[in-house]
Image (cartoon, rainbow, N blue to C red; front, side, top):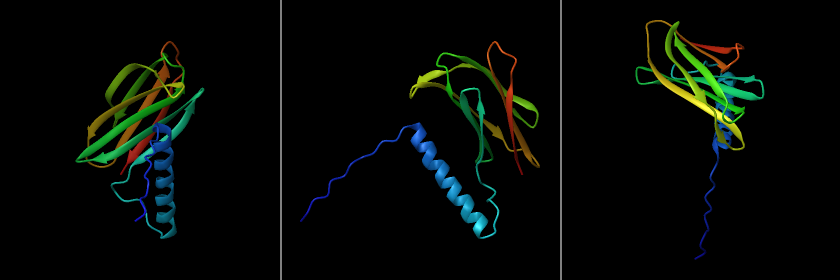
Length: 143
């Protein structure tokens, strides 16, 4: 009997994000192909750039509420960032976060949970590098 060797492959965060993005794109293409809309439990992501960095803002349905997360990568390690999350105009959190060194660049992340409210839910992230007044924001509305 021939023995098969197994090799474990470990992916870094970027590799997992790339695979996840590919799976989401494939699922979205399949939904369009059959003429359906995304299910009510779908996760919603927004991506963008800020200077040399790039961000991901996402809202995921979780047991009667939402997990709201913000990630910023490709910035200078040690740089400080002011990040504010809002739900239906109400401030969930506002923090000053220092970017830590990871995979050759600085990155930071922030997660919060928010209760589902009646009707549509509107989430917003607003962020800037500490010491500047140049804000960037992104909004997600969940129906």
